[in-house]
Image 1 (cartoon, rainbow, N blue to C red):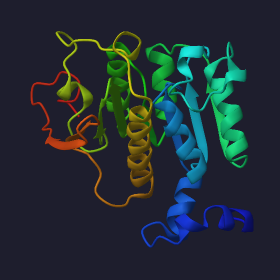
Image 2: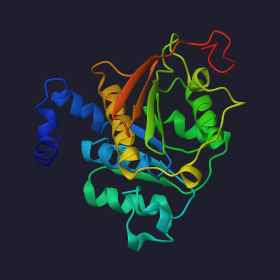
Image 3: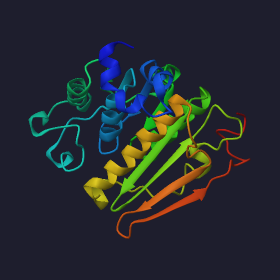
Image 4: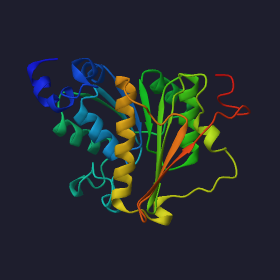
Length: 248
């Protein structure tokens, strides 16, 4: 770390749980972020600000006017641009010292596996089960921790899957690949700050994993009801019949 790093990250370094060692771990880390929408926006901004040294941004979509209500990494002047390009510009203005890789396409299984292989943690900010299951499969295969988030209407949830541990459940233990109802913001709506809260929690869990501090949400699901400001933490056990992680 140089003098500018010491000043930029001074408030984090002051924390005994982080210190110089923890900050250096962040600077040396790579985080793969799937989706630059409502969840990916606060995830990327907080990880960039915190000094995660390399961010890999994945999103094939372009910025639309209806995104701006909640996808705070993009601006009105970005309409029509690729989301990864818009996001990179915002992140570089926030912290020019980090490295950012943009992948403006939908990843197939081989491409996804290649990106997960290089990441220390994966954060899923996608909005569909197909992508979530594919990301989970790649993370299980490469034993990479996965921080998953979802938000709809005035509700949200966060879960952590420590795929580098044999006793940890995976995303498929929580949701099966058939019979689940698909809910999207475009069809059901979402309150803008809700995705910000969930995305910020995802970033927090990722930072804890990268540094190796505290107790993360592995083995549980944190559920938020913003309308009644109610929080619940549910226990999640590994499914012994899970076809994805039972051989882990």
